[in-house]
Length: 118
Length: 106
Image (cartoon, rainbow over the protein chains, first blue to last red):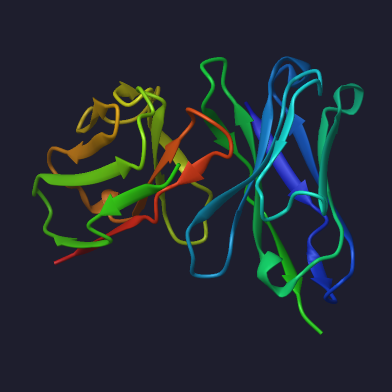
């Protein structure tokens, strides 16, 4: 069974940093690209970042470029999102999602809440 | 690429046929997905490549369109279908989502 479990969310002050993790199981993690997607409270979905299976291709939303860094460790079946210079508008539930062989996010984690507030 | 969903809110009864539209600000071929999201849960992939039903999704869901105009149709609304639906374009980065359509019980 495919499982994605996010962790690392919490309360952080504006300007602070936080690192999220996504532990993958039930599939060959090293063969799949991954995404981070977020959802602010009561709002819609916003794509955050993409990383290919070998980390050779990475992309970011303009809203996080230069502040967030996506990475992965295929040996540990884990995806990461390092978030720096956090702002109130980064407050959201952050989901990791597997990209299927056809290029579409087919499995999603349950999400982890990040709250940026003083 | 901006995606505009309509309507943003829809009130319908069990058994109704429901259609949601997603318009792209420029052509995206068929690189479009539809998701269903219920409160407090992660989005669920329903349709990919504009019209291909994801495995395990009931056949009452269907998708159509290409280029700039797409539709998601639920042929006969069931109680478990009351949720928010999002479209997403995967033609080019940055990937974008539509604003969502909330389907509520009339």
